[in-house]
Image (cartoon, rainbow, N blue to C red):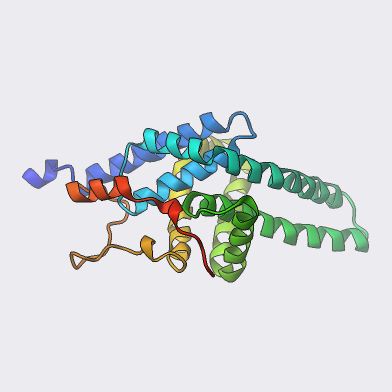
Length: 242
C-alpha cells in the first residue's frame, strides 16, 4: 500500500506531467502575447521540455524564465527574420487558391512545398537554439541541415502540426484545448523527435546508463546526485560539428 501513495507512483507522475503541460502552455501564451517574442517563448518551451525528457527536473517556471531571458535576443532576431517569409507564403497561397489557371496552380504547388519546408525549419530552428550555441546564421543553417537530413522526422512533425492547425480551424474547442494544455503537450511530443536527432550530434545528450538502465522518460527523479548534476548541465555549451 505504501507504493500506492509514493511520489514515484505512475499515477502521480502522470498528474504531475499534466500539471507541467498546463503550466508550460500558460507560460508560452503569456510570453508570446507581444507576438515578436514568440521565438524566445518557443525556445524556452523546447528547452524545458528537453530537460523534462532527460529527467533533469528543475522548477518549471524558473527554468522557463531563465531560458526565455538567455535566448531572448537571438531567438527574437531569428523570429523576425522568419516571420515575414511566413506571412508572404501565407498570402501567396491564399491568393493562388482563388485562381485556377495553370501558372497559378504551379505557383501554388511551389508555395505549398516552400510552406512545408518553412514549417519544418521554424520548428527545428528554435529547438536548435535551445540546445546548441551558435550565431544566428549558423543556427538557421544548422536547423535547415538537420531538417533536410532527417526528412522522415520532419515529415512526421510537419504533418502532425498541420493536422492540429486544421482541427483548430474546424473545431474551436480544439483550439481552446491547445491553448490551455496542448502547447505543453506538443512541446514534449516534438522534443521526443528533436532529442533523437540532436543525440547524433551531441553525445552529452545520450541517456545515462551508468546504473544499467536507460534514462527515464517523462518521469521525475528523486536522486539527489542527479539534481546536483542537472544544475551544472549546460546544454548550450556544445557546437554542432557535422
